[in-house]
Amino acid sequence: MRRTAREYVATPALFVLLALFLAGFVAVYAAALGAGPGARADRDALESQAAWQLGVPGPLNDLLGTISVGSLGLAALVAVAVALWRRRPDVAVAVVVVLVGANVTTQVLKEVLATADPLALDSERAFASAFPSGHSTAAASVGLVAVMAVAPELRRATATIAVIYAVGVGIATVALGWHYPSDVLGGYLVAGAWAAAVAAVLGLRHPEPSAAGLRGFAAPAMVGLVAAALGTAAVLLDRAAGEFVFITDNTSFVAAATLIALAGAMVIAAVAAQLDARRDL
Image (tube, rainbow, N blue to C red; front, side):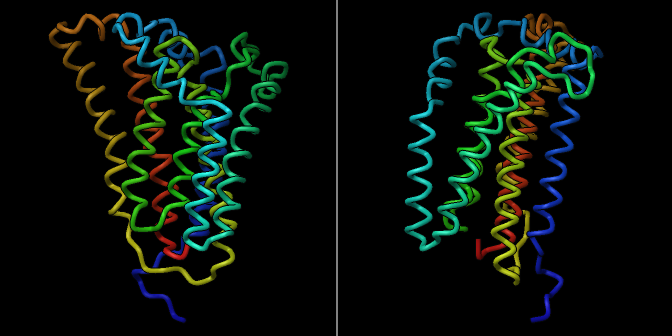
């Protein structure tokens, strides 16, 4: 069948996404775990102890409490049930592979990078057993498998909820002093890489793509873009008027939270959009 101009071949794009996520992971590691400005900003954001300054450690701890082995198991069961209800056993297997693969990969990387410095960064930060963040990997992977499991007509709403949850968990880990911002970005990229890889393999089983557009995923992408715009505007206003004491004292945290929101939204929206370009997935 001849493809029209409106048809979008998703599988090659998913392999490109996989490559970008892997390259991004290495770039984040190199920038934040070295000795340059990225590492300094990373430390400043963590040391802000923003949760206590804002008076919200309790709610943020409750949010992070939703991440556990039990909750991941429950997420897997629900995603598998939804995929089987759609009569998609291949997707049921895929969501389990993504959840297990992403979270095991993060735990292995944490152990490996705690005792090795593959890029010879010569930084104490490189040996901390924190990169990438397990909580952020878990939150992003749960959101991504939800997007994979649901019917195509529900993907956009599911992706938006997934972004809000993953971004909330990521920012909470930094605000509570559990993780550096780079740890969160690394966790998102691990989850995104697994989702892109598994979805690409699934797509190879379906040689003909369906016509689809990417505009429908403006909503999840806008979560990050709006957060980035608000964070940037707040910093600029504070620089101009000096009215926001918290921002003045915690510019690195505000910038990190803005970057986390943007990165989380882009990773999930990018994978979701490519899945939607293949309505048979």
